[in-house]
Image (cartoon, rainbow, N blue to C red; front, side, top):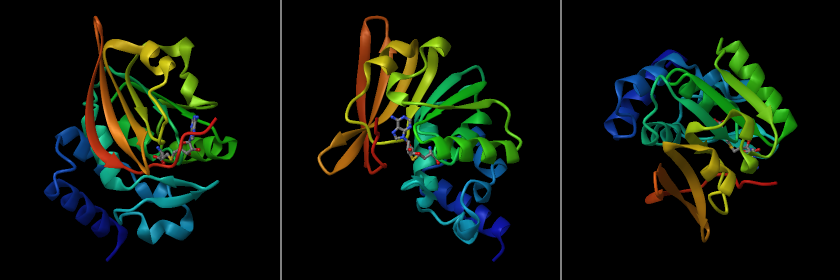
Length: 207
Ligand code: SAH
C-alpha cells in the first residue's frame, strides 16, 4: 500500500473511532503530510496511529491524540493559538489550517530548528516557532484564544491562565500519578471552569 492509501485509511479509521469529527479538522489531516514531520527512517510508519521518535528523547504524538486535542479546543479561523512543545511541528501544522496564527514554544534548541524546517518545507507560514520555556508563555503576544500544551505538565501554569483570553480555552495534560489527565479549562469573567478529559501519556514538561 502506498503512503496516500495508508493516509486515507488512517483518516477513515480516526473518523470511525470517533476521534476526527469536524469537517475542518478532517480536511487539515488530509492536507498536512505527516511524513514531512517524522524522520526519513519513519516515513513508512507516518500513517500508523502511534507516537514516533523525533530525536532529543522526544516524540511526535500519535495521530489520534492530535485529533483529540484539535477537536477539544474547537479552533476557529480568527484564533491566536499558543502551543507549548513544538516537537516536530505537526500539531502546529494541523492547527495552522484552522486558525489565524500559531505561536509554538519549544524548549530544545534542536527541535525548534527541526519544527521550523518541517513547517517551512510544508509551505506553512502562519506558525512561528520560538525557542524557550513554554511554562512562561509569551507575554508579549497574549491574549491567546487557545493554549494547547503537548507535554505532560505538573500543573496549569499561572502564565497560561494570565495569557488566555476571556472566553478562551487552555488544554493541558496534567500529572496524575504514573499518567496524565487532559484538563480543559475555560476562562470566564469570574475565573476558570475546569473539566477532566481522557487519561494520556505525553513526554514530560521540563525547565
Ligand atoms: N506537539 C509536538 C509533540 C510534542 S512532544 C508534535 O506535534 O510533534 C513534547 C515537546 O515538548 C518536546 O519536543 C519537548 O522538548 C517539549 N517541551 C518540554 N518541556 C517544554 C517547555 N517547558 N517548554 C517548551 N517545550 C517543552
